[in-house]
Length: 379
Image 1 (cartoon, one colour):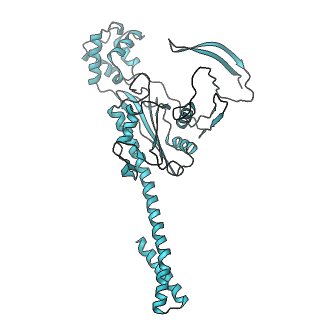
Image 2 (cartoon, helix red, strand yellow):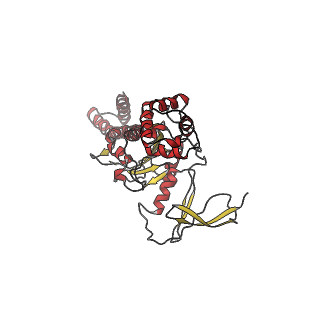
Image 3 (tube, one colour):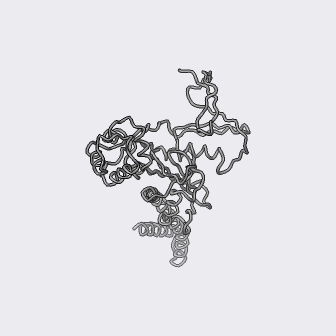
């Protein structure tokens, strides 16, 4: 196998780029593959809900093919085993879709393109734009197909954007997305929350927002060893990366709060998370996730995205609701069965004393009553 490579680097905070100080081959013993990262910094090391350990656990939950070994500053080692050996499919690179382009971006693309004519610019720099669509956009904006893209003015760019909105262009391809997948989500939940009683996952079909394809997924773990006297736990993800802050501003949180969990058999106060032994993980995969700010901590609540979150949660909720109702029926059955077992012998004893029955006759009556009540209960 190829030797391991050792890099020492620092971050150029002005350019947000790595500066490589060392790059050499290294002997990594019997390690067949993998990556080890060591970070030296000054700070206060804290655990808890937003600690490094919790973050890594959430990361592994959304990346079930990954195995992580974490050694904290105290020297304590924690293992996060992988839940599957199946690697996710590699996403394909696509060109921007015209519906997702604004005036500033269009002008920038026009300046850096290698296309010499406006018609070629639209066909080569954008996804799903053919000769007919390109001609319709350019003609409608009052420009010539042979115009150089570099000569497009801000006013002309505004006209082009207006024509793009009016032109019917096919949706972008969805092979640029990298969803986790229902089977892998469920396997990951079973690995991380092995004491739960029920697991399910939902992967919605891809949708499009402003020309940008996106896909929503939901995973649910419920019951069993999960805390029963607490509010449900919600993990939010964008392109498999955990979102730990600004939960109140996130579309994921809004969708969870606006879902009627009572209809699925759980307790829920108005405007609050359901009170249930439940873990929810909600993931959006997209070539462009609309965050609320540059810090990328919350997903913006656009209608198309919020709708998909709700539909995924409702689909997962229906599956969970069937499990909860089935469990309730089984508990009711057991309760009724317990009543029969508890009171029928007393009825048999009373009949024996009233009718002066023998022990054998008493046993026969008890058996007959039990059988009759059991059959009537199932009708």
